[in-house]
Image (cartoon, rainbow, N blue to C red):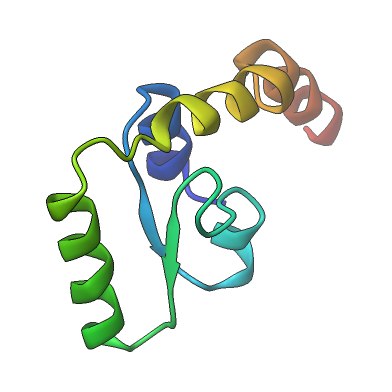
Amino acid sequence: MSNALLEAMALKKNCIVSNITQNEELIKDGFNGLTFEKGNENQLANKIEMLFNNQELNYGHVAYNLINKKYLIKDIARIYEKVV
């Protein structure tokens, strides 16, 4: 799982990610961000263009709510402590 993606979601940023399993665990296409097929640069370009042309799209708030419910740092730290 990408810490950078978690951080972007916590900052309420619109996220566009490849459709690898780790990313799809956090981002659901069209709900709290956008996904594209890994290696498909045309699809990525289309998703970027869609966000650019639709400034009112704001997946960041929905992504932020997910982070606040499931991925609080204190909860993650507790999990890491159990592993170590």
